[in-house]
Length: 578
Image (cartoon, rainbow, N blue to C red; front, top):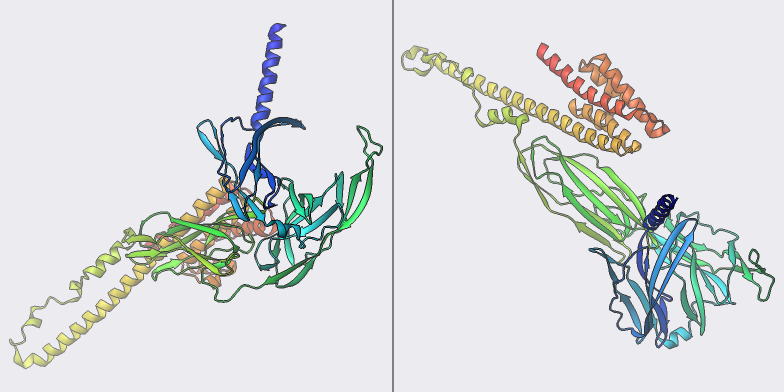
């Protein structure tokens, strides 16, 4: 029996340990107010959630003065089986002078790893301006305001709309009765609000404030707009009212918010070539897969863009590339949006493919431009420049050799009489005419041979391009299949097969319909089973992209590989028979 007790105790301990370890660790600093007056004090706190660490290095809080602390508190809560352990270190700070100040992150150690908290911004107002604050019409003990950082914005800019509760009394609950008219905006609600309650002094009264709703607005068209007012219903506890463990007596109170005026402007003129819709604040970095390639082989460039614009309108930027590089339509390999604070952070990775047509050194300088909402001007970020060394490969070795030393000896007659004009003076006219004819034939032969060499070289380069691009697309399709990214997989399979055929047979993109491609395949004597398989794959890709009907990705991938190999073998057989 004692053994069973021991096993049960060990199992419960391991279960509790797993619950604790499963919780998300957080380390942050906060204050009870974001704005204070000179001479006022406020609470500054460092909080560890689900982190077992005793050594916290507090940041430099100057010019604030520590008047009390630190005081330490520990708490453990279990809600719906979720256990959270919290340790907090509190200080009372005194605001000594007017200004806007950043308190740097605090740090702590967990094992050998150093963890940093967020940083904090505190606005210190003059005592007079705070006392005469008329920007907020504080009516009653409780009110709600609609607040944005700026009343002017551009199309494509993120606007954070906060519903902020101000109260000097306890609130049991609230209910939003009506929604604002936001037809001119695309709205993205942020449900995970972790803002701590703050204190704010208005007209000499101290209110507690809390963000109760947050929405990200993306303006879709220019104009002047009015948002609000919003009506809310509050449940306020009744003092000395009837209450019990299960019931608390409350009274209803209806309130209305303020109205917001927003002006949405269009984008300014002089738009850079590399602007692709980003409005806000962004970073960009880029890389190339290799620094040396053969003529006709693909050069892959990846560009990562991260910032806080409208994810829907940010496209792959265009930028100047040197002559001799054939550029293909860029594809997107990563598209993520994450909530960071009170904004949506966008991360996109674009992949560019370039194919060189001659052996030289190319310089590529990826460029990305965005409209900065801080300066209201276009900002440009450049990466690199990247130098790509293009060398002659196997696909152009025959043509290159013939270009360097053109052998025309087989076009010149070996008759020695042509070189002895003085042996038969009475034949000089025929000798001269024959020499001119041979010379003319020689030049015609040279021109014909050069033309054949050029055609052979272009065909060889096109062949190399077709195979190279197809391999790139199939590799990406295989990656998307592994990641179970069905939409991107079908896009790459369609591009791998159709793009290969367009490049293989030098078909224009304007004639890239399935019917036109089938006709071209028939003209090149491609066998009917190959054509049928191509049409079947394109049909499956269309159903996936436009109807959301997905099939067996492995079979589709193998079918795409088979089509490319079959066309290569079909062409080789046809040329051999010819």
